[in-house]
Image (cartoon, rainbow, N blue to C red; front, side, top):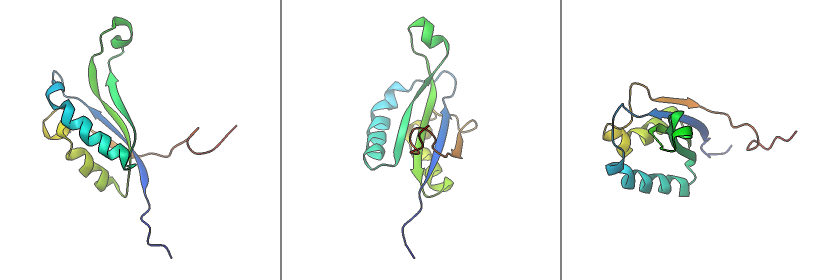
Length: 112
């Protein structure tokens, strides 16, 4: 019997509160995100923008979307709640969504 911890993928949808400025907190956020990526905890991540950002040429950031690997929903929630964007009130805790996520094509190794 293996003592290895089973890890699961979780999708995190972290919308920003209206009218917040991420810039002062970005360096600390990025440092932490890069550490999680280096250890394999953070699989994918990025910023969400408004649909108008595509045509206006000006990115208006409205939140973050990441895939994190963790033991449990609670463990992933702790990662998110310890992030400077959460602690500083950038991400809206009322609209935060963390759900288990099963990777599909092409990452699952399934080919047509």
